Image (cartoon, rainbow, N blue to C red; front, side, top):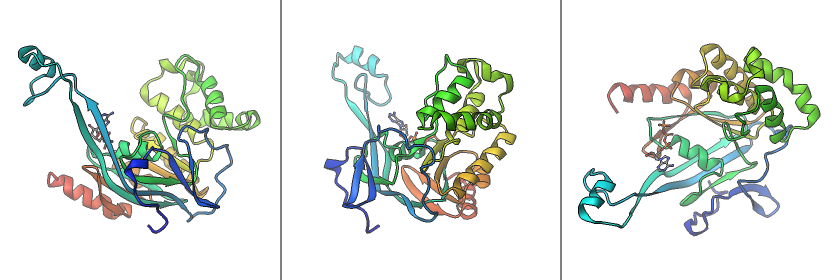
Length: 294
Ligand SMILES: Nc1ncnc2c1ncn2[C@@H]1O[C@H](COP(=O)(O)OP(=O)(O)OP(=O)(O)O)[C@@H](O)[C@H]1O
C-alpha cells in the first residue's frame, strides 16, 4: 500500500484519485464523461483500483426524535418536541483492497453489509468520510451508466446508451446487432423500456454496458433477475472483459453467479472485509458461516 496518499478526512471530497500521472497522482471528477470505447488497452496485471482504509457514513435526517422505537411523529405529538435529529449509519468501516487489470471480483455478504455502498464509493458517487479510492479511469456502475430512458424503445436506448458511453456513430452501427442479440429481447426491442419487466431491462442494460470496453465495471446485482441461460452468457461476456484487461466487481447474492464468473471473492460483513481470496475458499467459509447462523 506504499503508493497511497495518507488518509485525510478533511480532504475526502469523493473525487477519484488517478495514480500514474507525471506528478504521482492526479484527480478527476466523478461526474466527468465516460471513457471512450476502445480505451481498455493496458496489459493484464497492472494495478487498476486501490481502496485504502475507506470509511463511508450515511447521515439520515430523522423526522422527529425517536425513543425506544416509538414512531418519531407520534413521539413528537405526545411530547411536543420539534427538533429533528440526525442518525448516522457507518456503512463501510475501513475497507482496503487492491485489484489488477483482468480481475473479476465477486462481492458477497448479508443484506446491509455494505456491498452496494462500497461499489458506489468506488464509482465516485458517495464521498468517503476517510480513506481514498484510487482508480486509473472513472469506473462505470451498471445501472447508472448508461442511464436508459423509459419512454424510448429498447432499440433507441441501445443507440443512445452506446453514444452516452462514448462510442462513435460508426461503432454503434457495428455493435448494434450484437447488442440486440445478446439482450435476446426479440420483438420487445420495439417497445418502450417502461413496458419491460425488471429482468428484461437488466438484460438490456447489461448488453449495452458491456458492449464498450471498461477499465473498471461495477455490477450490482444486475444478474440476479436474469434466468440461468442469461447468467451463462453474462459469465462468458465477463470472461471476455477479463481477457480484455478490464476489472469487474460483481455484487451478488447468487453464489452460483459468483462461482461462474469470478476469480476472486470479497466477503463483506458489517461494513468490513471479513475475507478476501480465491472463490472456492471464500465461498466455502461463507457457506459454513451461514449454515451455523453467522
Ligand atoms: N441511502 C442510505 N441512507 C442511509 N443508510 C443507508 C443508505 N443506503 C444504505 N444504507 C445503510 O448502509 C448499510 C449498508 O447498506 P448497503 O446497501 O451498502 O448494503 P448491501 O450489502 O449492499 O445490502 P443488500 O445485500 O441488502 O443490497 C445498511 O445499514 C443500510 O441500511
